[in-house]
Length: 219
Image: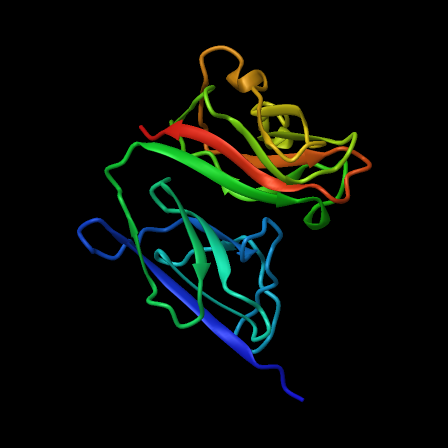
C-alpha cells in the first residue's frame, strides 16, 4: 500500500511583504513540541536531509500523514532567526521576517538520538559573518535529561574553530535552563566568522534533548 504524505511549504517575506529570495538559509524541522528531528522526504518519498537548505527563501518537504504538525527553526539568508511552531500541512506558507531587527537569538534544537555520541556534529546552522555573539543569555533549555552527561557547543574545530567555544561541558542532568559561556564568550563576546556551529555530546549520551540559545547582534 502506498504511503500518504502531507506537503509542507513556506516562503520567507520581509516586513514589507516582499519575498526574500537571496541565497542561503536553512530550516531544522522538528516534531511538534519536541527537539527531535522530524523525518522529511520529497514528493516521491526519498529521504531529505534535515536541516534542509532554503532555495530563494523557500522550502518544500513532505512527511507521512500520521505525523502531527511540525516546528520550524529557520536561519534566514540575512542571518535573522525565526521559530514557527505548530506549522501544519496546507497552512498559509508566508513567514514574515523583520529584516531591520539586529538583535537575534539562535534557537538550535538537539536530541542525543539524532547525533553520534562523543563526535563533533554540525548543527546545520552557521555564524552570520561579523555578527557579535553575546555572553548574556547563552545556554540551553534542557527538556529531557541525561544523567552524568554534558554538552559542548562551538564552531567547527577542523575549520580553525573551537568545538566548545560557546557552551563548554554544559550539564544536561536536570530539565532546567542552564547558562554557560565557553572560551569564545568568556570575555567580550565573539565576532562570527561564518563558521559552522557544532555540538558534541559525551560518550554515554543517549536520552538528552533541548534547545541551545545563542544571542547575537547582526552587523
